[in-house]
Length: 315
Ligand code: SF4
Ligand code: SF4
Image (cartoon, rainbow, N blue to C red; front, side, top):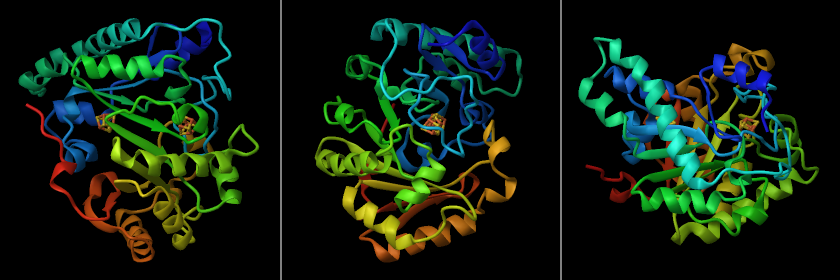
């Protein structure tokens, strides 16, 4: 899936290729947590241990070219698995953990690192299948999720909602994310640039499926807000929220990082205040209300009702 030249380019950006189509990269929030400087919003909202998170993907290829993606053109685009071979789940897990450990050894020489956390980090507990690409395109995604759960790990899987036929047969991750970044088809085509002509309709199908999954797993709809681009028509976003009835809605500001800096301007990053105000408008027009927020991440969490079990407990 990835050429030697692409591999070199990705490794320069901090990625470590795992097998032939997966990758791992230490999340910036994991680094901050190891330095006791801060932790990610998913630790605040859901209780995951940020320093024990392995940010990865099981498929570097993607079916979209989103404006705000931090990915560059080093990774392939495809609407389906068009490669002859694929790696086994055991191999992906084993090699991802090894790659994560190797990347973490670099922190050993830093006196400011929390030693207890670094030791714990060597045994990742959470697998965020969210790095880049569309993890669910990997033909053995169900086997991978099952195996991770069998090992006592949690899984957060993010999809751009282009593959309802795969989603419909998915083994449920601990938390399923569906990213929706537009209030209508025209803006979706501009922002998410789907390879599928009927990309918007596919997203709607995935939102409908999400509603069916609400008793099977923790479902999340994530809306990435881009100033001057998609912070309009809150009532349309509210319709989409009511359609999917996710357990959680994250309204999150775009961050000007990676290759997205070539496509967008710094001014496209909304402030936390702007994100909150827009989230309030969605809340006003939907059955949801604001239950939490994290200013540094410019993110606001909406739920129908706050629930004690939203924060998972780990040892
Ligand atoms: S859950 Fe996401 S933001 Fe938090 S540490 Fe893992 S990859 Fe980073
Ligand atoms: S779906 Fe994700 S990986 Fe693919 S282009 Fe969009 S943001 Fe990037």
